[in-house]
Image 1 (cartoon, rainbow, N blue to C red):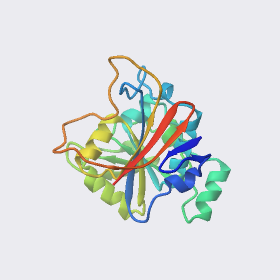
Image 2 (image 1 turned 45 degrees about the horizontal axis):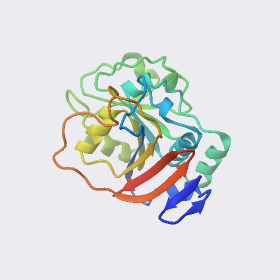
Image 3 (image 1 turned 45 degrees about the vertical axis):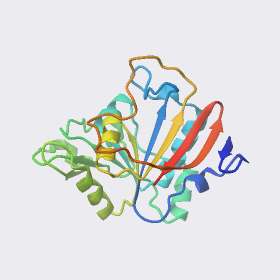
Length: 236
């Protein structure tokens, strides 16, 4: 792996490059094809590669909580949020809990409590939903937090997560959650992998939903290159 900008570096230290500054922060991590597709045949994995998975693991190691939409959890085949021993040791040595917490945004609360990401979780997940839903057996496997009426109020949800001590949040999507977080003004950073693949027409973008009031400008922090994949980090 090479760092191309701001200074050319061979095999840069990924932890130093991606470590969060002090204070609350919400980071997004996505992958896209050269022609702007967020997936191939409904999944992002064909756009990825070993270096992308390496950064993916580092970002999970650095966060307090991982926030995903219920649709992404199902479509991408999420497993329980586990880390290897070296990454767990790093977290404990740096004042973090052994594992980050999995947070699932589900407006309809239509999740299966037997899903492996819930039933096999090393720490109790949190589900963010709307008021008025009966959690039923989901309450046996996750903490249920109501935020909003009819649709999830992401501002209230993020505030609640930070009240619980989850200052550094990482979201892996999906596109509708990305769009809603952007519209709510909650995105502090985007880590974007650009795959050297032309996916062709038909695939959706990495963001979806209603238009935002005005485009937001983020500042480029670094550019990495490995095996044809570009890794961009933009932040406020």
